[in-house]
Length: 356
Ligand code: F6P
Image (cartoon, rainbow, N blue to C red; front, side):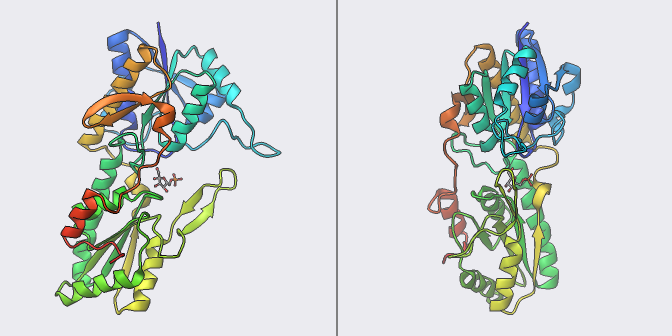
């Protein structure tokens, strides 16, 4: 009997469990294969912690957030904390996968996790990548699962903020996730009828944002609602960073919304409040689109594994599920094109981007 391992890495995204469910059901029903869950991401692979996952374990999982495979985390077997600095423990990962009898390992992750997967593939592990991130910033797939759930959460937040903004004649800023790519801000901003959308891809001019707020007031609007990605930068400025991880050097972002609020209050007379949506965007039951995408990804990953084609990543391209070379798939980050069609639509509707 073939054994397929499943590992989740990086930040979580609604739909992780739906992928696992699809993997288990496809593996068992179509191939009579066994699925082994790796507990706690790469950490579990390093410690050799595995658990058989069968049909009864995945019942109801299509609608649950988080991951039932313990935790998902940003551990990297090529760079583990050691007494004298980072240590490469990838050989242990390969050995543990061999001992567990895994014929293939499906690794579900965003760009960081999938780059590790590609490196492990080069070292001889039979990997298949499944793209996941609420940020939707992987260039080789139309969408990653989790993204549309995050947009829904952010859109609902904008709707609610509009209500209270109107009641108090306030300027409301919603800070959403997106460190380099502003896809969530852009989509939620359009769906939630924001007055201003600020993206990491378009450095903003606070005078320009202030002008839009004043224009709203002059047109008789009693409120303004702004949505800003966490990675936005004022022109000539930097991202707002709260901390830097000493091991990985990864920056924890935060404060972009507050910074903008202070800039606006210094420029014009307005009462500004900031809401940081944060990890609310990563939890919750996946929306139908994400459930279906996650399911299609999981099913396809099993077929590719059973065909013995490795170092591949599953993707959505023009409505079709395909697999592509994993190395190539993780090479590029998908950024918002400031001249792209969605920007044009938003501008046509009168939404400002702080660069006018
Ligand atoms: O999953 C990607 C992401 O959502 C980024 O947009 C955000 O900066 C980051 O995760 C925060 O993740 P954590 O707080 O889990 O490190």
